[in-house]
Length: 191
Image (cartoon, rainbow, N blue to C red; front, side, top):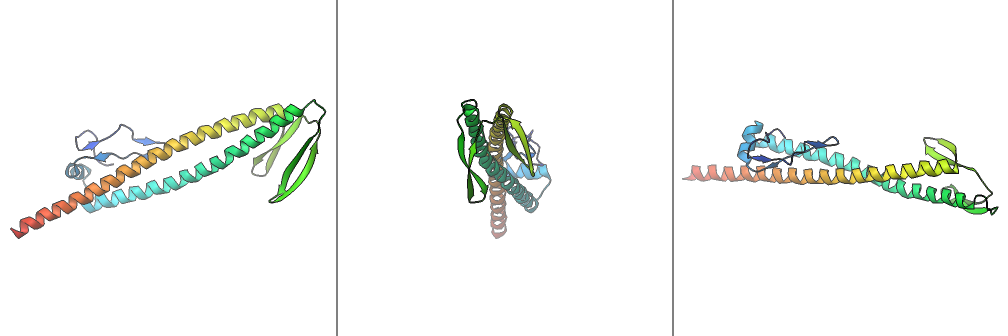
């Protein structure tokens, strides 16, 4: 916010931003906040509403990223299970019978003999062949990264929700202060 955090009118937890999401401060004294920010009530309300809209846009982006990661993690786990099964069957001479999806809703059955390698789909029309051990290592690393990214996203979403709440409370405080001031002016005119 534009207000200085050194005065008693605004209390700040000390965080100015988190991964590009600007922090907002709780406004204790609206009149001092307005004087320090150099804004009138309408400009302050417009600024706060604009900030809320920015937060909502960021929230939509973070929620989309969260959904993508939540869908990606089970896929990686499933691939890890398949590679672990291939490693367990390796050297036993026993063939692995597997059903796999050829296209959406179309499956085929395959008989997999002893194999030393697997092909992993990396995306962007790229598929690479890895040894089973390399594939397992790569998938475990990808799973750890996806889980860590999900944790960071959840923390970012919580921070963002806190900022939205503080901004909404500040907006209500500024609006209510303005209504109160108008009533005081109206009462002074009537007497």
